[in-house]
Length: 161
Length: 259
Image (tube, rainbow over all chains, first blue to last red; front, side, top):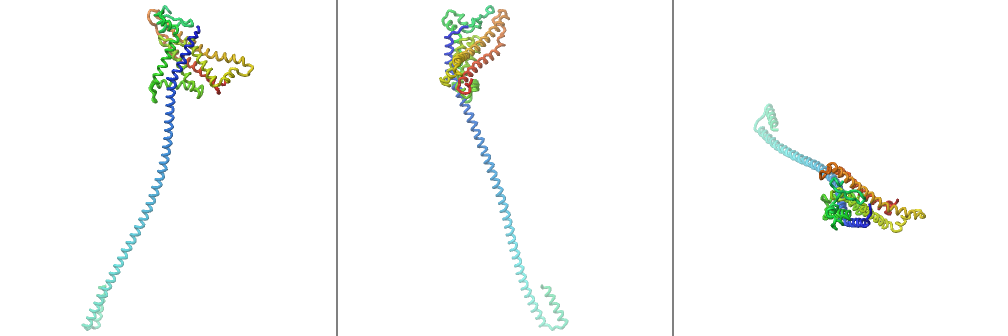
């Protein structure tokens, strides 16, 4: 076993050159590539995290909007129910008013017809009275006949009512 | 071993070793200056060839890096990321700066260690000259890091130690300590890989002994050792790199430097 200084120095020189060459062709590009990939992965993860936060925010916003929409829908339904009830009340009121009007009209019509009937009755009574008077004038009457006449007249009156 | 069909080559430590492309070339053309030169610089030739292979693989695979990587890019990124994690786990966020040096050291040593398992190649790390060369680089880089990060005054003060009247002794101890660090690194790696190569050598010899030299090849007993050898190669590279990282951390001017 003997040391040869020329060989030792040659090995040392060779190693120094190898370090320089591998630094140039291996370490710098590969470590750079690893750093770039690490950076990209970190960036992608950060983007995913941001996207998740954005999704969470949108979801919360969506939930809030949904709740608001539900509240609005509930309020509108309540309002519609109130409007419907109001409309129903109005319809009922109008129906009542129309029924009342029909009733009043009918009553007026009945009253008119009654009045007309009365007029007709009075005219008829007057006619009968005239006829009876004519018969009294044209025919001599005794007590029995008077009575019979009067009863007959009353019967006719009764029937004519 | 010679009588069993393959020729042992003299290792620099006087130990036998398997023939490789360079030794075969030298045995075929022993008088050719080229083969003599390659044989003379055998470890450097293999080390540089493996380094060139490493550079070629990385340069080719990093030509067009994509955000969605292919298989090779994924494999290399996994290695690079693991080494970066290893260094930064010791040095903290500052480790990124030292990752190219430590990472290259690890990849280079692993490649050289594993080369011994490939027929025709050789582990340059089974030579003390190779491991000492690497250890010298680590030593110089650690000292340079200490001077650059602490400043000259703090670096010298670190060697003087406390109390001040023991400075002469402290300086000697610190200098010895700093010199022993690369020495222990280089000896550990050299001894382990040499032992690994010797084990493979003797297992191949055992296979040839089984066939009594009648066939060109014997049972490949060495294959059983390969998983262990791969593990040893990785562990030795890891130990060398981790200890180098620790030496750097001891030179940094924060809590890592307290020792």
